[in-house]
Image: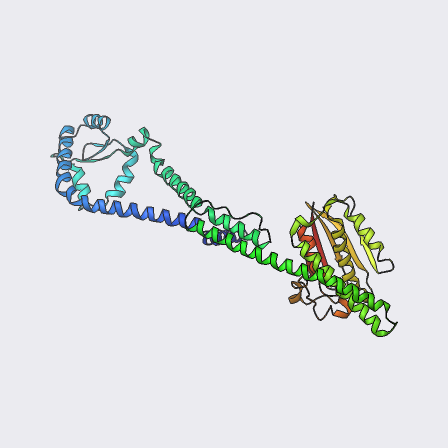
Length: 433
């Protein structure tokens, strides 16, 4: 189980790494730095290899001869110890009479390093044989360096960490406009054009941010023009509709008169809903909020459906909500009316419930009707959309009820979710506290 979680975490990290351009650039920067160091060191080694062979190696050989002469023949461990104390070297003496090592802890390392390598230049250069059959081997006392400078061994690691942090900070600063553009496009997608994307730099990303702002300004103008046209048409239609209704009222009581009045009422409702939809499309600015108890609001609306199969299940002590009361009333009434229209014939009451969920208050309206096909659920809140199975013009209005409900919920900072309850359809509204 732990291994599976580890694999899943690794996959998530890999996906985030592939998705993040900043981290990929940092990794590319580090790889290039490492490759540069390797190329530099390899090139330097190749350049100096010839010089070492012709200049440094003879000097080292002469120096090792002098060190071996100072130790003497037969080798004197006290002289070797004096050399070790004075110079950062290690000395190992092996022979028939004397076996001495200045750094016994390095014996295994030395044996492993020079085993079966007598033909290489290292053992020949740093090893001398005396006339009495002893063998003196010289090496670097690396422990002396670590004892005197214990922190310097960590300097490369600290340098690499600082380099990584500097690279990440630089890349993050370079790509900060991308975060601004992402946040700005999200605001524009939600219909909020009040805060344009800030222009932080005058480079390609700054030009991109300016172009997105110009595009958003154009879209905002187009939307305003369309809304103004729709509002003007809807407003101008009210007067002829009112006159037509008055003339129909004064005509004789015939079936044609009743049908005409129904159509005129439907057209008036359509115009009212269109005007309300355009007002709500402006967002929270169109609301007039007041502290509202959702349970009281639901009870008042349910009283208007007296005699209908309606069942309430309201939670105790819900926190008050800042709601536009007329529009919240419209939302709840539309959801209950929709549920009664499509689920009351099944013999089960429509269930209306409320409960608190963290920083949200949840309203649920569920019927027990036939439900809606899954591929049509996402389109129920679109304007003028009515699935053939559940809604027709004869039974379901003009198709703006759920659209207005969605706009009301979103303008309050909440959400409306529709899902099949099997049986029936369930509408869930979440209000932020």
